[in-house]
Length: 98
Image 1 (tube, helix red, strand yellow):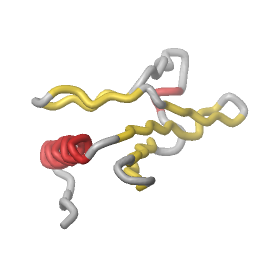
Image 2 (cartoon, rainbow, N blue to C red):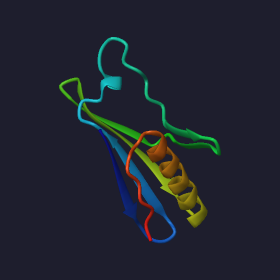
Image 3 (spheres, one colour):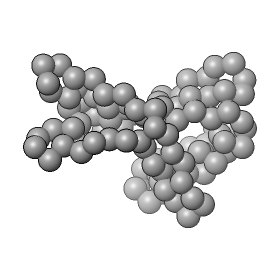
């Protein structure tokens, strides 16, 4: 389960926070991955961030959060194009804002 939380700050800065489900499996077990960033790849290129936070309790991962910061309207438009493509390829519902 993935949550997308847009957080609007003072224009033109926008932060989108992507939060993985509780107890993300990528952080569990002996083969746990070292998460170094979030990379959103499509035919236009890569959107990336290294702003990653993980929360643990007693050594067990609770959640993983990545923050992607957009500074311009062009950054937002690019992110929305990515989300539209991702939704279509993943058979998810997606509606662009008016």
